[in-house]
Image 1: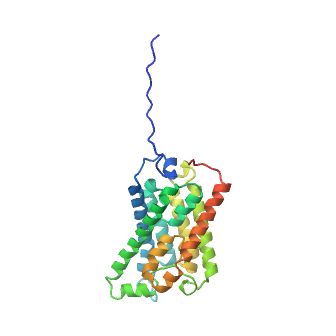
Image 2: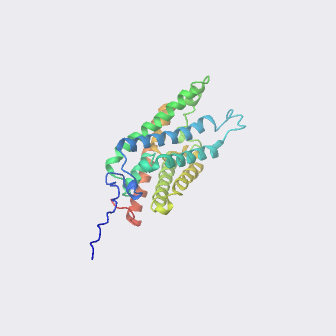
Length: 271
């Protein structure tokens, strides 16, 4: 009786150095530079698409004569669609966070490695600032374009005088925290199973669209500190003085949601 030949099985690619999202998707091991570049690109795309729509197309040709402007609905869709596009384009590399609150919420839920968090957040902030810088340069190409946008707040977030509907600090903080928590809960749910992988970008993008439809009149919708930082830099003294709210509230909401899911939810991802 002859000896059986030893069968060789191909070993899976090691992804021990990848984020947990990548491990769950059996993704290749991407370098830190690739991950951070993807986060910067995705945030750039999100801010360029959403804030750009708010500044160029929400009221056109003017706020007093808005014949073809896209309004709140168009702005909400712009943020949602650019998020879908960004996740589809580079989500397989970095996880497609594009938002410091998302990164910290996933960290609280045990779905992202802590060592990647500083690089992700820095990349997201820089990507957002690059996007508003491009928008500012384009606005400068029209007489009084940048000045008008600057005086109007540059689509920044705010409360009180800075809120589109005049909502106070408490209402704005609560809205931002709760809606960011909802956003994190949806992300954690739709990315928990491989069966949802195809639908995940659409579900996440539509959730962001819904969040904007609810809260544009309240706070001009942040749920993303990188977006708020990027617009406040060009929005003047008031947005800068109120910026802390749109850093603290989304992070608080994201952290609480992540911890709740981690504590009560079914653990599907290993460290």
